[in-house]
Image (spheres, rainbow, N blue to C red):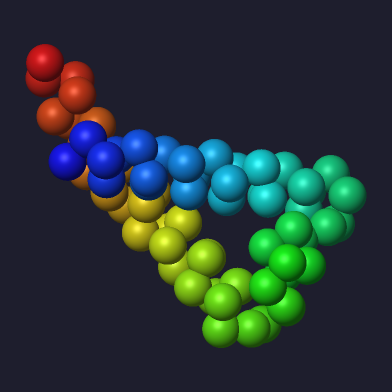
Amino acid sequence: MKALNIVTLILLIVGGLNWGLVGLFGFDLVAAIFGAGGALARAVYVLVGLSAVWQAIQVPRQLGE
């Protein structure tokens, strides 16, 4: 479970940095690396989204400790 939390946090950091680049400079790093609209870029976006859901589920558990 700890490994999953670490992986999801890393993906959220990557996603957050990517959105920061999009907001500041209009530059999508994920699309630049994997191709805009490509299957790999979409997979990264889906994984970032699932990571956010996983971390959101973990919040009540963390607050309860």
